[in-house]
Image (cartoon, rainbow, N blue to C red; front, side, top):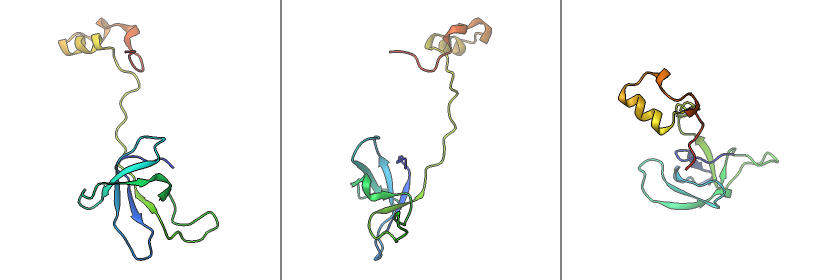
Length: 112
C-alpha cells in the first residue's frame, strides 16, 4: 500500500474515532504526520503499521485497531515526461519558435 499526503483514513476502533488525513510522509519512514480530516487540526504522528488498506485481516477477521483508507488524494495531471532545459524555457518565454530551440535539450530532468 502506498501512503501519500492527502489520503483520509477512518478509525477501526469499535467505539469510533476521528478521521485522519495524511499531512506528510516520506517513503521508508516509520511514522506519518497526520491531522484531523475535518478541520486540519490536532497534528500528531502515527505509526505507518497502523494504516491499512482493508478493514479485514488476512484471515478475514474484522480489524479493531488502526485506521483504514477511505479516500486517496485526487490524481494531479502529470507533467509531461519531457521538459525543456532552462535555456529553452527562457527562450520559449522570450517568444522563440520551437524549431529555434535545442533539440537535444529535451530531457527527463536536468542534472544539478
